[in-house]
Image (cartoon, rainbow, N blue to C red; front, side):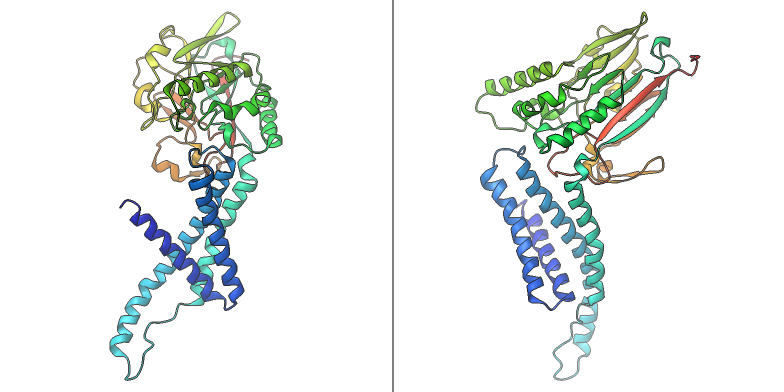
Length: 408
């Protein structure tokens, strides 16, 4: 029963898409090509989801099948909305014509206007082309976003301390070593003092990261590379033959991070020391609204003083308002990811930022501030499901800490 409405919408979209193309052209071969493309995209998705990759969402070929279907779906949805608007006007006209028709008159339903179909197809072509571009180029269109954050209680020794953050690698999605290596090199070029990774190294299984270990092993910083777990890292979305197999998978993920030289924080803290002063780096396991809640902030802060300058890594930004802000300890800077910026949106830096993900997460991309505490939500280094990005490009965040009271 739950599939009735989606299937109904699906067939409505197919009908209106066909009607739009049929209205603007009388060439049968164009109609045939349109129908063939639709059948190929839908058939390819069914082939991958029902036959080839039934038990996984980590296969790049499946993601491309999903990506092309999403592209077609958005195109047809926009066409359908515009043509439906025309039909809302046509129906009253048809009713009026029916009751006022002359004897022998049979045609009383006004024909669909060609200009409306042309406008619908033209407008729908914009997101259609954008989503195709997102798959072709957008997913590896890495951007560096830099912020300078002032804290009056930042230890003097850490004036100008530079943090590089990446998140949501989703290594099982990657299909281009050269492009991923470029992103890693771009990260290293920032010459950050420390690199922090805020979760989701894989989609489901540890084996996904194995081909990329040598690439991510190249990430380096003077004060180290630290990481936490995201909701996808636990293997909760995969089918396992036994509970032991799932545990072995998580252990393999831990081993992979160790091999890469990353220090994985599991509800614990590390102290970064410089010139006799220190800041506390705190990392919790995943804590998410509607997701796994393995994060234990109190446990992670056990060895940390209330006077320490604190940087917290927590994968899901919903943790910030739920537990971090109300906590007795002031956490100066929280770093999260998880949202991906939905991999789709519109952004004019410093002026406008929008993505459908804002309807799910209050904090979903960039810097937020409350009660003199800040949160940065990284848009992600990789991608998942839809194999592309439009507007919300893969991100390397660079945050420079400064104290306005410190004389440089």
